[in-house]
Every structure is written in C-alpha cells, then in structure tokens.
Length: 216
Image (cartoon, rainbow, N blue to C red; front, side, top):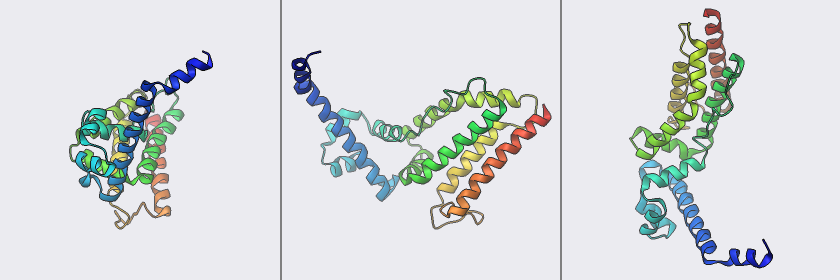
C-alpha cells in the first residue's frame, strides 16, 4: 500500500469518527471508575456518569446501549474474566494444585489492588445484571480446570471444586470488611495478615490434594 493511500485512510472521515468514538468510550469508562472509587457502587448511575464526563446521556446510550453494558465494558477492561483454562489440558495433580492456587491468588490480588472492583462485588450481591453476566463468564472460564479437578478427585470423599468455591467466597467476604475492620482478628490490609491468608490458602489446597491422592 503506497503512501498516498495510507495518508488518505489516515485522514478519512471514517478513521476520525472511529477515533472520536473510542475516545468517548474511554472517557466514560474512566469516569465510571472514578465515581466508584469516590462514592462506591451506590453512587453509580448512568446520568451521573454522563454529567461528570460532560457527555450527553443519549451519546452514552448510543455507544453502550445500556448501563449494564457500560459496567461490563469497565470490568472486562480489568481482566476480571480472563480465561484461566486455556492451557490446562491433561495436567498432572501438581499442575492442577498450582492452577487452583493461581486462580485464587490472582482474584485476591485483583480485588485488593482495585478498590473499585471491591465495590462491584457489592453490585453483584445486590443483583446487578451486568455483574451477574460477568460472573457467569468467569465461571465458564474456570470450568475446564474445575472439571479436571472433578475427574482427579473422583473416588475420594473430598470435593476440590467445593473447596475452591469456599475459599473464593471467603476472600470476597474479607475484602468487604474494609481496612478498619477485622474478621476473627485478621485484617487483610495488614501486610503480615495478607501473606498469612495466602499461605493458609496454599496450605489448604496442598493438604486437600494430598488427601485426595491418599484416598484414590
């Protein structure tokens, strides 16, 4: 493709329009994150996002279609639904153990380092449609790996999938306590407590896999 054609494409109305639309989407997503960080999930609505971003509300709907779609775009940008099962085919028990811990650790770190994501857990618990859809997508991303743990634990009386669910739920609940509160004397905003939580998760998973192996 010669220089004249490239220059024409670069300066064409369609290219400029697409660039403008991308800038509008980026601004709306960024504004949404700022509102969540400052006011929490309860302060979030499409009118407020449009007003603070200085973008007409009809333009917000034209770009995202609905408030739920805007929330989905924001969360997906954070890699919350990253597929964890793409390279988990035919893994050994050691691989499965490491992968289960990796999912939980990544989930823990994501929510700890992104306060706005902690607020979206509240949205999920409150029945936010967008967060429900994202939760389903997340579950699908983990399913291949969890199916392998089902196969591995078959014949034992220990359910590795159930353990993973309990650990994930526990981490979410710890996140919702906030930096001023403890649960059973544990405050995950304290670096030592946070490392102890991670160490304990690793130990529980390791122990569970050993129990399954001993019963097979």
